[in-house]
Image 1 (cartoon, one colour):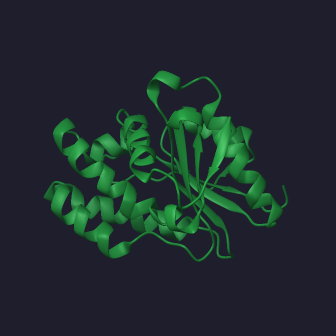
Image 2 (spheres, rainbow, N blue to C red):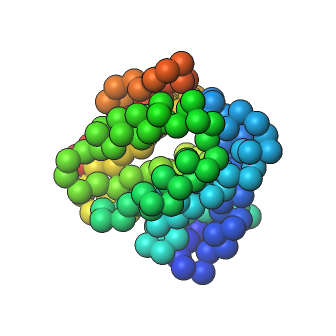
Image 3 (cartoon, one colour):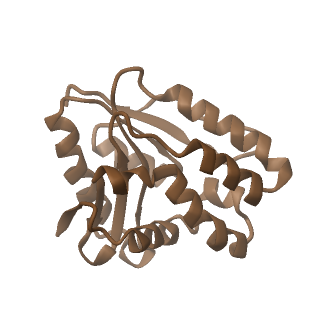
Length: 192
């Protein structure tokens, strides 16, 4: 059962499940190769990048927090100041420039018109492959569709890219810099 999360959500649980889900993500672990650094800083990164979903009431969780999706509706954005501070504090100096480039390229791939953005979705690895991700996407996309707006996200694995394609997302381009793993910005047109 998927339930819509409002301001009563346990944001700590949602952030923890997303951190678990991304623990083997190629792009994230390129940025945080050390496990200690990953578990110290990535939860803060999640909050800075996608935490606006908690205040906007646009966070979705599966029953028991097996998975979570943090959507940013039109007008809600990442906390750029916090993101910059976290990158400066936690990312190896030689990766700060390339990561800044990736973030700029991601930003440039967003649709020009108002849209919903999914910066973070993840399912606890012990629950992956059981449909939680699909149900989280379907629940949120019903809200997006009711507003007649496009949706945007970045896939960081071929498996997640395939999942998003099944839900109507289309690859905009492939992004990679300075030896980083690829990621794929994807848009789901508003015509769905």
